[in-house]
Length: 156
Image (cartoon, rainbow, N blue to C red; front, side, top):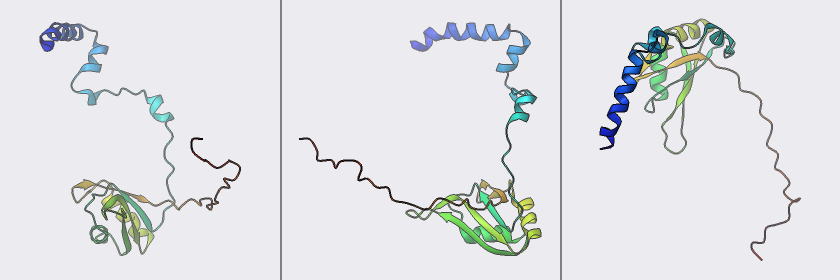
């Protein structure tokens, strides 16, 4: 019943879109890939992510939950000598967290590894490879003194 009440409204909307100016028809057309909804100025103003310095260590993201360190090593070994490959796993389940690191022996091998595996399929998932960024130094943990607050004794 509710659908029967909505049918006239839907047909009116379709008729309005068909008679709308060409500019509005572009918003509702099925081949939206031809039209860019962002202006060129908006695209140029978005800040790009800073690129990491070239190194032998690669960051690989987009990994399947079933990808192992050995599978990662095998996939990247065809582009050079892999010194180490590590998939970061969840402590409880043991499954991949979706990212890992590959360390090559030389810079040239790491560049070939990025060119060969970035945007390619591994275990049914598209993976992305880029130079790893160095870890940021975090502040050492300092416990806070909670003595400034009176203890909680519950409802009195």
